[in-house]
Length: 220
Image (cartoon, rainbow, N blue to C red; front, side, top):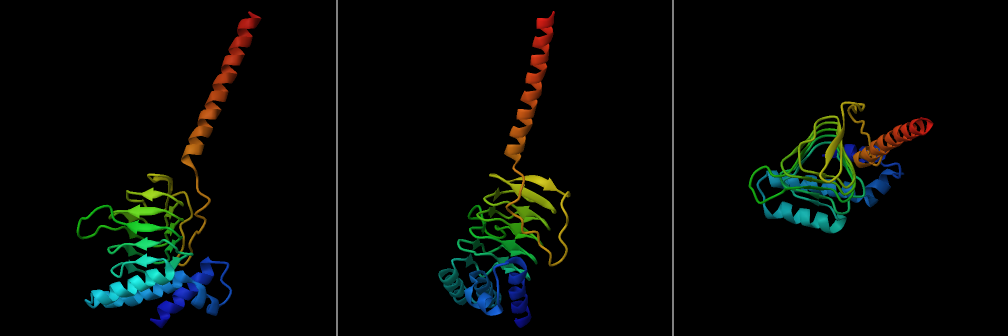
């Protein structure tokens, strides 16, 4: 327990340049508070208790603004930055070295029983306001852009953006090593802008060809 707490504190300093001291992190970081309370709730949940872990989860939500079902499985070195509005469903599974920002939902899409929430593999970054819905898998070292709505599996080493989310990068980004997470979730390609740029370039080429033909006709 103390080893896990030490790792949870260390990861705050690694991923948040605003963190200045251990005391500040312990007292003023709701993401850390939410993780600690969740680990306690999850312990009782695995022991077969029903009401107590849900009560701890409810208190957690009231204190931090972060709602994590006690059944959710969360790995080591998990970091929630700011965290207000984060929702993590019952059958969610989160690997190691995962980072999520405020407003993220790891939710379900219906009333079905069993596995109905996403599985997030190691070294994933999920940007602010992103929604990852259903029993899908987000592969290792992937990045989900802010505001994206992810409804399908995300391959490893990929970047997805948009509503619904679509893959815009795969296998051409540096794979994060253990304990090394790429937090640049705001610097992502915009596929709509890129398509508009290609259309503009094509129109300019066509206009140039037409102008050259007009000049040739005039010369004749």
